[in-house]
Length: 88
Image 1: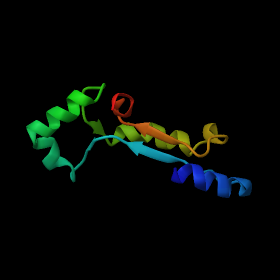
Image 2: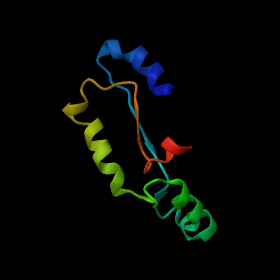
Image 3: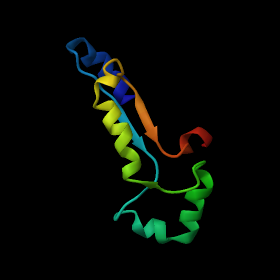
Image 4: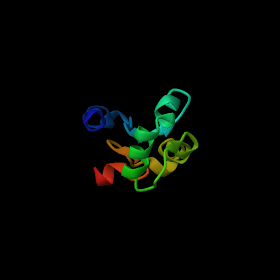
C-alpha cells in the first residue's frame, strides 16, 4: 500500500513510485537458511519455480522499472519470487 499511496501523492509531480518484491533469495546473509535442509525444502516446495532465487534473478525487473519501458508504471510492486505469492 505504500507504493500506491506515494504514487497518489507524488504522481502529479512526475514521480513514479514502484517496489520490488523479492522472494527467498540465496545470499550470504540467507546462507544459514539455505543450508537448513528442512527450511530449504519448505521454500523449494512452496515456490512453483522449485528453487531459491538468485540475486541475478532480480536484475531484469530492476532494469525494467528503471527503463523508459516503465514510464507509465507507478504504484505497483513487481514480485520476483518464483511464483510464491501466487500460491500462498
